[in-house]
Length: 380
Ligand SMILES: *Cc1c(COP(=O)(O)O)cnc(C)c1O
Image 1 (tube, helix red, strand yellow):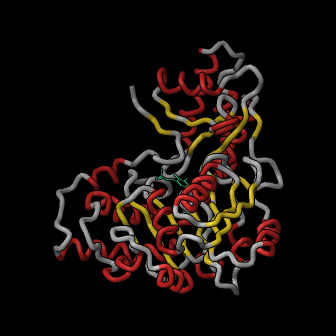
Image 2: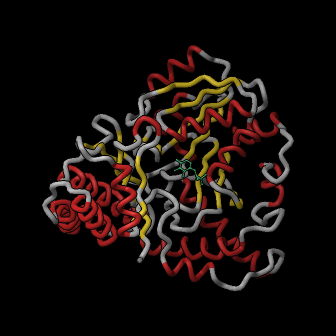
């Protein structure tokens, strides 16, 4: 059975990138490696909207989240976490683990954070040293207005930490223009690569915080990253760097505007297909929808846990559902990275077949028809 990932990370890796990563290992102190790494280091900053260096480390996205907390803050520091989903909760957990005093601006899952409430929380807690926010909250599909949130802290010493792990590339992100201080990303979302690389960019304000905090980190130390940049201070993930080099080439060939248009169309097509199948879009206006995934609540009588299980066992399609109170109710169709109209059509064909397998009343083609229609319209 052919396996397909309709998940928001890891994502399907194009064969071209798999092959790039299958090359012989080159030594990290060789001239060849230095050329590879310098090339990567030159190409990453524009993707983050920054002139600052972007550091590449061997880590999952969560490792970069923890590194940001460990390097920029000290136990006892007050911080604010903007939380409207699972990854906002993860930031809270990491901050608490490091002994920070955590204030939370909590909003319902399925909504975007309200910047006005962030401003109120800052007024109530003027001594905070940092604010944490997630750009594309992958657990729900909501997009947060990072630009507006960062504006609140523009002329302050508060360090704005952004988890752009799934949002980068798919949605515009202008680190310098928006005044973001720490921007985190990872290889297995928009970059179309296997998991294993994380990216970290820091502003001058962030570096001041790092110097003040001077925590005990060694492998995770941002100061060491700066000291050796762009070269690694220990063995890098060579295969992934070879693949990243090729991924940057692919992104350059498509161009970011086209990459973003493709994701917007995938999101629109998935939303229409889900509606046609009787699902209700989870992120409702005026909340903003991420183009990384499309999430929807199942109609009464459809248990999404059963549907997801059938999708994977009978059709080899991996898709995710909801966590916690959304388990069994939510479906999240991932379409970040290399996904195209035919991938999404295949995924929705499997959804329709699964619904039929489970005895639901579905008109074959009602979902996939929307995919075809949407891409046909958008191509004109
Ligand atoms: C995927 C993801 C993460 C975590 O990445 P891991 O590599 O699984 O640790 C964090 N935040 C967001 C928004 C993500 O989409």
